[in-house]
Length: 610
Image (cartoon, rainbow, N blue to C red; front, side):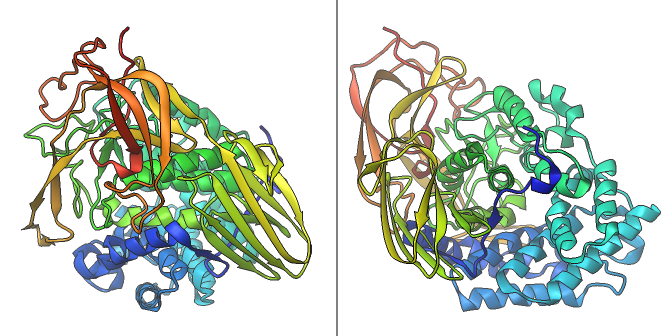
């Protein structure tokens, strides 16, 4: 796919002024606000006492990471207290911006050794704040920060290294914004410098195909999740053609490191094709953001459908129901979350990386996971001029100009959506019906899957969409399979006992509800599929959308136990594949639940040998 740079971007995002969550999505965001995301600045020193606001704690990526999700969450919920907290942090950051434009908490004599990934991140985050608040101080602050960045890079006073070198393209979110507003050539020149000093990921492909237990920027899963959007966000400003480089990279990563939930193993560097390797939470939310931008820039449904699978499965699976704790690493086949002794089965992560806690292994995910659900909500509707695009079936309300659309749906748990539209003008509404949808009907009339355009006239319009989704036994590597219905993966849930750990380490307190938890298994997990016949039951979405004990939907499967041993040296990790597919017990009717509802689970399992 080649597209001329002047026609690159297909759709534009709406802002928090125009989109409001409702239904299960509102409840999920409210849980997030009541949990760690909404309280991190009260309980975690790296946010509460950060150098970004005059304290002495971390002054690099953690505050910008947190604000990147906290800000849209606060505005989507219209929570005045949270909005005031966001403003307090932004005010402090702006007040400390140096006269030459430098914006990070770093004295002048240390700038050459300061990894400027933080500049790339804070300018992107300030752009998010501007979209939400309309604060007219922000464009000038971003302008001065990036002009200073250009001057210092161009003069050779600083250069890209480490994280900044491998994430150079992240700067283009703010650069594109600046160029649209100011049209000054230095903005393009900065883009050229960043790409020239940045890493070319073509040079890393060979390493993706044979992952090793060696820490490298080139195989770091979060870098790669971010990287997928690099061509899309930069090609306009660089004057280059778009070639769908993201699909080339993604297909290679998926072949050698893919997961059932459309992500990649990376604990924390690429870990190969195995359901017992971990996936870092940061990579999930960053890959979601890449998919969101790739869909906006290309209009290609494949990115939106991959986004759905990530958002409805991988994201909720690795965060506790109350959203006070999270994992650093999740595993598709995760039979226990208990601390390992001395060594861990992960690529480069430590023995506690899969526990649920405040900052298991490392604190980047603690601050970064907040962006997942808010940015997903902002991807529900997009537009191209006066044409409105319902990108993802999410319960939301859009109020823009002379048009109001209320979308009521329990999708992805139930395949029905109702639109209540009030319009003062005619417009076209494009509904992206998933390509896997079957027997699609709009107001009772048969319609095809894919992008379906409805011309909406003035006045009130009501639309009801229904469709079916098949239950598929999807083949995975090594003769394994997983159950999928539409965008939802299903897994065998494993009952567990929760063991709580409260303690203080390096001045950081872990106490209920943001302490650490081990999950100790209490039920069997060694199963195989005995039939490809399944039955789905819809139960309704509770106050906790991804509830463990009251899942919105379940699937009954016929299964049998098989001989499946533990991974060598690890008592709490199952082997990559079973010892034998031969049944060792009678058939059972087993209830599978959405992957995002099961904290301990078996997702990839074989078929019983007949």
